[in-house]
Image (cartoon, rainbow, N blue to C red; front, top):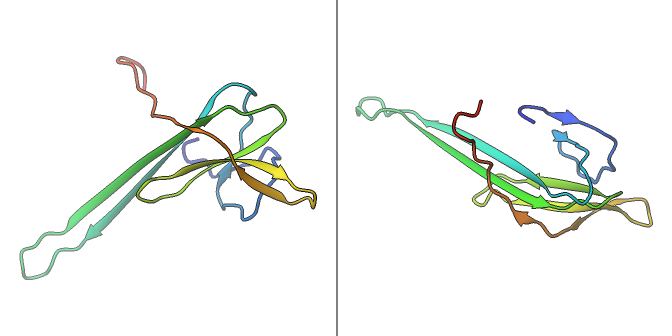
Length: 121
């Protein structure tokens, strides 16, 4: 979704809602994977008078999960920055009070797609 910050297709919303989200429609009974990339950069200034130069540190993480959506159901896939770049898949279920609840559901680790040699990038 490269840089997209918000797309709403009318799914039920569980609180709290993130500031940035993207909703998509997926085909039922067919596997779907969601991947998240995180990147952070920090700069440490040099120490004046010591000859110690400044340095830049970059960290990137990738996490993905795969699951099979069922017809008529709504799901949420979220990721959190951290040592494990945890990705969670939950089903959004409306309880008897009309409140949307997040119910954890089974999912599998999904890897990054490989790029074929000579394929356009």
